Image 1 (tube, rainbow, N blue to C red):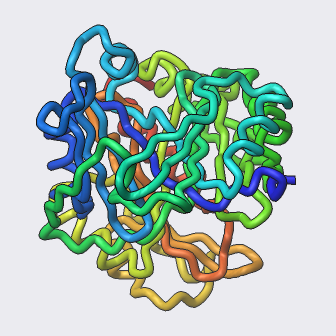
Image 2 (spheres, rainbow, N blue to C red):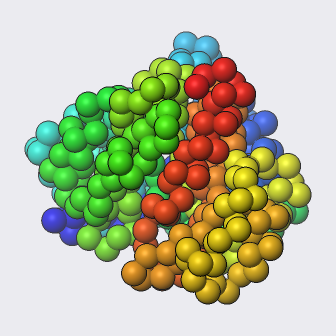
Image 3 (cartoon, helix red, strand yellow):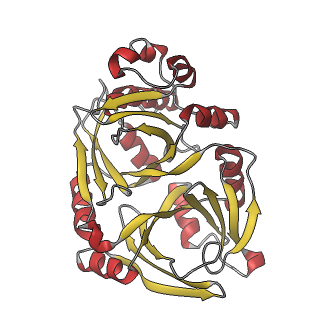
Length: 362
């Protein structure tokens, strides 16, 4: 059914941040993104400063307000630096907007066209969970650097991190709300339920969560949704909801073709990752079979491995990218497996719980 909405790919993610200039340096020097475009006071924009960052097919827009009463400033104050807009490239913007709103989505911005000397850029927005916006973008008639109002500003990164594209974008919602949002994405965007994990699959002695993975018909768009489950102590989802002040994007997973090189480069640049105990690797080969990578290298870097019927994957998770325990990134390398590392859920959850305990939030 998602074919009816002509969803093609992730166009970009827009983060609302407290200081876009400093955030751009963080993502450039820490993650290897290049600045390619900019808007701000010196381009005639009086309200917002934005930096467009690109690496491979991944595009991030970092925006901060120039007035404390601007909606971007108010949302950044409430949620901290966060993914505020998930932009999806579509073939037919009007159809995507009108179908989604006719099926129950709340309109945020009706189809809008902006033009400059390089062409016509069209977009519309609907509301998702929390304050997250889902943006439809049609840029087949636009040939500029990003969108009207932006000017080219090339600042390369000295870091070659090897990130290629977005694999999936995960949201956290309040307890009892996951099924609501599963139905929302099914009916308003035509996404399908790929798989559901209950609290038996994702739990420790202390906490648990449930998760549903929504995807479009091509599998290019994957939007997992988590909610907390009953446990003895506060789960990572509850901690996120508390410090994010509501539902929102928990993490963004990025594909690489060489996770060892990528993680080595990111660690050298100062990016911090969750750690797992060395015991995880003691019987790794007996659990997942033969893999192409050196287990010693994986153990040194803290990279997790999981296998399913289609193949295996390697994955690792950063620490939160701000002081609030909210947004983080996943680095993933796939070798056939299209799963999400179900075999690693317990190890990952325990690693997060160790960090929660250090923060006094477990």
